[in-house]
Image 1 (cartoon, rainbow, N blue to C red):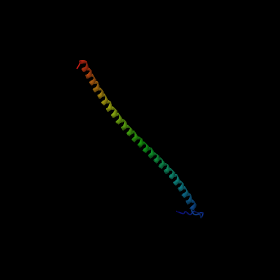
Image 2: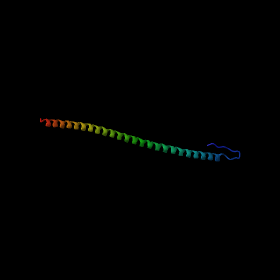
Image 3: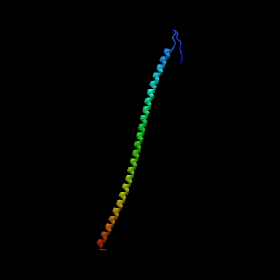
Image 4: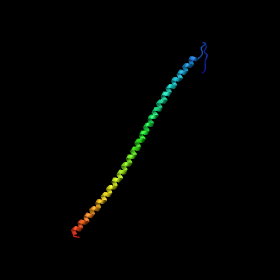
Length: 101
């Protein structure tokens, strides 16, 4: 700590105390700003994690829907194939019955 001697005989301790108080005030203000920035960063990180979770859920949902669509499409095709076979068998039997075979 520096001491300044004034012409009136007093040392500069009062001046130093004022400087120290001013520096403490600046430190508190900067600490508050830093705390606000940290809280904002924490909030942003939380929002980012939340968005990541949402994207993951949406991807899983999309894959589930895609799988469901493929299975339904396959079953519909299989069912239509089965219906056509049955239809042709019925036509064949009907033709055999009509011809008397």
